[in-house]
View 1 (cartoon, one colour):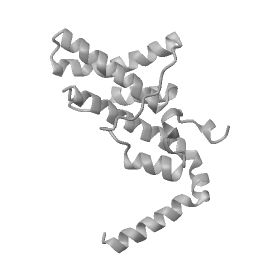
View 2 (cartoon, helix red, strand yellow):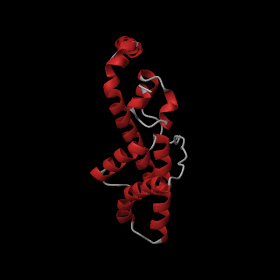
View 3 (tube, helix red, strand yellow):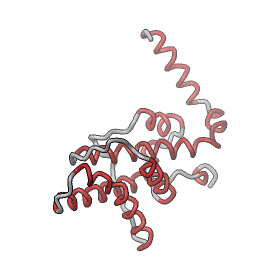
Length: 168
């Protein structure tokens, strides 16, 4: 698009996002969008942590999606970031100490994230919130949803996606 078309498009988009009727029309779908955006933010952060440590998965499998879907039932994205960081750190240390080849160890990480969550829940431990890693910034889609459409800004980090947020 040329500059004038971009300006026009952005103006239309801003009007659409700022129209209160838009949010009420989307209210039934917004929680699913919230969960989906959070899931992909969590997966992106997970991959970022793996790549920092030299573990590059060949692909993201169904188990990874299932684990992050389940985590979103129990934790906010900031808590999931914390769990993920702990699990990746501990698993990387275990693999290094035991001289596990990276291609083999990479399969252990998502299970470690799942087990860490289950342990916190079983022991009823308080799980702290993590802040966003500056090397893994918020996506444009996330910013558009939480800042522009939902108008909750960074509060989304500490809130579990829930219908009760809109109907307390």
